[in-house]
Image (cartoon, rainbow, N blue to C red):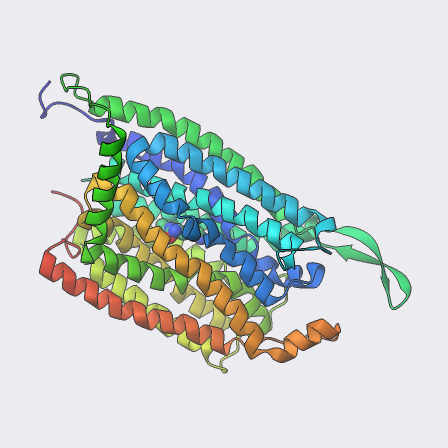
Length: 482
Ligand SMILES: C[C@H](NC(=O)[C@@H](N)CCCCN)C(=O)O
């Protein structure tokens, strides 16, 4: 069979998009669990006595194992060596295990009174579960990116990445809008003693939204099994029957190939600029989402039950815009410019959020929509740009290194924000300790931190554009090969 007439399964539009649809289910479930606790922050404080710092510790657990135990990097290395089928199944299984631990911790009231390693036992176990889950969702993320490159190279790759991100963001949107109604729906009545009197109190079920996440994750795990058979068919369709079988590597060869990949990637300036832009950009958006519902209560005067509605508009816009911007990048190019425009919007939005004026809910709506546009622009150009800088056989490792650097921010920034929030609002901390009426948090300082990250991202975006001009990566060129 000659090269010219051999057909690959990826040449079939239905097969490419079918594969994408299946893996998107797994990511949808993963993104739902990632943010499910955000709208529950005020409830975690009132029901379980968590502080902003406690919430920050729990949120930062997302990066603990990925960052300190280098789990993400191992994930990328495994992906490049063992392939997407093994790595995808492994990562979706890890997500289920982590979510189950988190569910157990949140639904177990006996953990509330104890401490472990100096933190609330419930927070400790919920954080461990979240940290394990995060290994899974991050490795699944790089696996899915590599799968998309495998199916869509030379085709509508940025559009496909945009579509996958859109479905994942649907998970984020659900995580911002659904948990409070779910927790309220499954409320139960408890008898408690207050001022020496027995009173009946309705307690929301904070674990109900997590139980729902667990069900979604199990469905995502099953979906990956279905994808595996498609992946096998794709490989068979691309295997040249006359090609010689690849000789298995010795242990020495394996290690030297791993180190050689790592050396080449970290010696690449374009890689570093994308990675730094990634950590700055995502640290100003994802950690913001963790505090957005609380910001709506404290700055814009919304009630707890409606506070998640405005932040849920953020992923809503990205559903349509990420594929659209991805499509523009595919056809017209201008990847670096798209990333810079996104970073400018981040700076603008967070600066306005930080001002102690314009505290009207409709201002929050407009700012959230603009932030959604930024969250569509940058990722739609950033991820499809990586294969222009790094060869395909090193992509798993490169994506994992970028995610690893990004995870420092996803771990550190929420912790910093929780700490700054408590430090800038001592009266709230005192009122909580005294059990008196809790005043509102002032969010000026945390929002200035987010704005600062946006400013740095613009600077790095320009450096990336310059590097592209020097090295000719083709970031400003279209992805579709005519
Ligand atoms: C594709 C990209 N994913 C990531 O950046 C992940 N490392 C973090 C996922 C966190 C989920 N809320 C993206 O989602 O744009």
